[in-house]
Picture: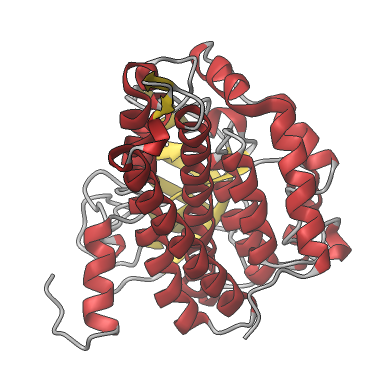
Amino acid sequence: MNFDLSPEQEQLRAAVRALGSRYGHRYFVAKAKAGEHTTELWHDAGRLGYLGVNIPTEYGGGGGGIADLAIVCEELAAAGSPLLLLVVSPAIAATVISKHGTEEQRKRHLPGLADGSEKIVFAITEPEAGSNFHRLGTTARRDGDDWVVSGHKCYISGVDEAGHVLVVARVADEKDGAGAADAAPQKLRPALFIVPTDAPGLTRSKLDMEILSPENQFLLYLDEVRLPADALVGESLDAGLPALFAGLNPERITVAAMSAGTGRYAIERASEYTATRSVWGGRTIGSHQGVSHPLAHAAVQVELARLMIQKAAALYDAGRDLEAGVAGNMAKYAAADAAALAVDTAVQALGGAGMTTEYGVATLLGAVRAGRIAPVSREMILNFVAQHVLNQDKSY
């Protein structure tokens, strides 16, 4: 058992850390408050090859795995710039297309995903379905050689930055009716479609969120969106379910890595402050256990989460999908809780300064709280662990 990164991974971590430090949290906050995107950081990360570390070399990527992409996610977050679209575009979309797309789809999309010139976002969540993707109401039906997709999605990240959206639908059959969004499916048969964000019939509405982020959330409406046959991911409908699940483990692992990086950032900011701030008799406030112990506890939780992230990524890259599913869910659960604890503890340690924009920790409160909900809630992870690890009866 080896917990050391490879020399290449160590170089990657150092290089991404250096890039992140050139931008930092002030840049991230300034972009968010101005309603702008982190375009410069994204382009630099793409130019340097960090966005495509998990994409095969024949399509312009680095040929690495999710462990490498997790390093990128963590280090940018540790520098104060947690980029959600790293999870959506390189982790989910690139993995799905790389593993289950047609050769033409790989050639068309992967080089742009690798160098950052293209972004593909992911649309699965629906208002009525929630965490139950078996209740997806978005349907696709054949019309000659074309597909026609109808339905609506919510909490879709970064649609305004992307050229395409990877839409999860279910194939309508005769019992469902002609694409009725509210019809109860007889049998789930998911299919994924690569939909241009400017496709006729696709409209969006921005959601106002209480989260300080340069990446926006949207409602999506698909009203009889007509797509060519090659918009379907894979050679046939049989690719649908494997393609869907191919993106979920990388999503959980990279979200966890981003959370761990955010936790590291918060603890570092607080530790710098408490090691130099003197109030009582010249002693630093960090010398008091009431201040240092909560920070130490948060640091322990973040480090434990990092270990589970490393395990999950190693299992996934080894092709051990079932084990990676368990570890990925556990990593996401642990990292989300650790990040929320770290940011809250940092705010408390800094006192009033912790609530200011200048010190850059309270600006992350909304994001880390959301991390305990999305992309899968901690309650659903506990359900998963109870059922699949502890062999308990399904409770839902």
